[in-house]
Image 1 (cartoon, rainbow, N blue to C red):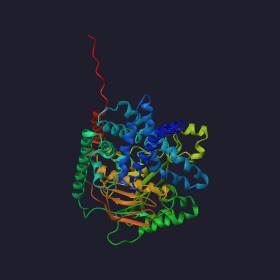
Image 2: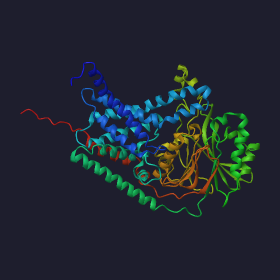
Image 3: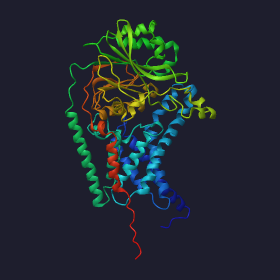
Image 4: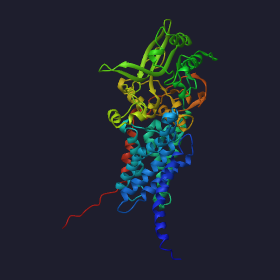
Length: 533
């Protein structure tokens, strides 16, 4: 049968479009493997994307590979960042129109890192099956860059696909989330080459063997988990289920404060807690306003606490700046109940602020261009110094992290090195009420649990609407020690034990660096040239 001339352009267009569509679908499929979807077969999407990018040939191969990888990233981030729509609906009348634009724009920005990885892969990839390792290196390096450049945004790293607390997730204690990202990408790419003769089958079997070994190591680590010491401090997390929009209604102030006070003072079976944790931005007022001695609000908070109890609470505060101006900080304060009221023991100011949410990048330029008025950031918050742990009376030393600081691998490790000693736990206060009840809070919770695994430290996580939990040093949550989305009440239990320093705690991203060096085996060898005789 001879095709008509009219059918040939259509067939040619279909051939050119097929890999582009497949790239988008592969990225979306990989994102569906992330919590809360949990469709782990979606990890195969990384392997499909590898084959699609690898298939870019011809004089425009570099550009084609970048486009295909970028479209894979677009599919990935359109799924994993869909929750970005939610914060704009808190003030829907004023900002709701930006939500449908924010998701594709943010996804496209993040996809640029994957596009760069595609170009890097195509430029140096060799011809053998070990080119799968080079693909893993290019994309893992791009993910590392995404987590560091321009303040970084390491949301849903491929290595965090495995549910935190599972056997495979324990590999983060060895090589961190970035190293586990390389392992995940390398395994998916290797499995996609299973049909390419004996070398492909061997590489695929090696990938299966490596992951089987990692699963065994993780299972053994979980089996050796230490019991919680009977003398461990008791923790109470207060989750008052306050929607974000309610905080903008002045008439709700008394009710909001009343909920936190009532849950703090509530009697439960067993000994009273040693520390009570409220979330980020718990009460819609400056810390220096409602916690001032002599106010009815400070008296209400103090009376809800027992003598020698510590309250950890998040909120904003004002302090004089270096040039006489007043600066605002997104802060955490630790206050101890004394006979005279509340004594301030420690303050931590958020270091890694959210661009366009807590500060405006290139503020003066945005103001001149008229962009700032649409973002509604105002003058924003000032960043605090880099994270360091705090010592609190009657409690083990703690590393505070506010909100999405828990996304960043290595923050706690770096803080310990700044002061020369390691904390025994991490407290992560967050305001996930901004994210509604979709995928955002659940993904945020999974990533915070990875910080526990990497550091070998328990995490106490408080949010106003969920998910709040006591997380052990293996990233697990014991039954009854969490409150999900929309839950009202308290989470109470003993602080889990810290583990000895992990390999990741000692070498940081050294594991990733080693994997990147190994990946050079998949790089194209330069052709040798003979000198003329």
